[in-house]
Length: 151
Image (spheres, rainbow, N blue to C red):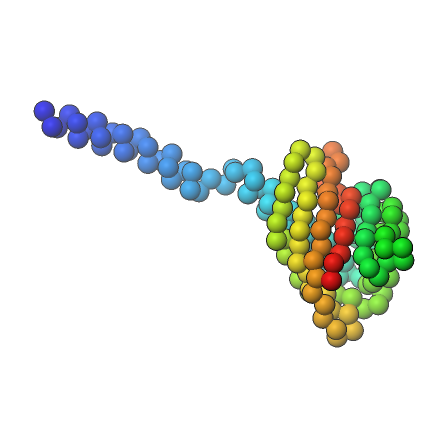
């Protein structure tokens, strides 16, 4: 009588093993996919900044974007045109974005908050700071609505 129990147990193990393994290697996890997408876009932003032409950054910002930093007159550049202009000024001063790393990412519906650590070099002076960005979904694309820099 013990044999049927072992067979049932063996069948149960065989049937459950694929689903347990699939959970460990599930690449279709939406949060992993989104985090990976944001990491890729962060690197694309860094490369666009380092291209020395802030026009390459236009695609990342909403029309009504705000860039907030202590060195911006009035502490904020409002509107994509002013944001890009301010970023070009920084680039023209010799700034190079050495690294940009997402520390946390929170998404709720069509809004995302991204907290990053960055290192930037300007004329041999290295500065480390933090960015907090609020992005909004515009169609299928995420764009920066609020970009705040803290050094």
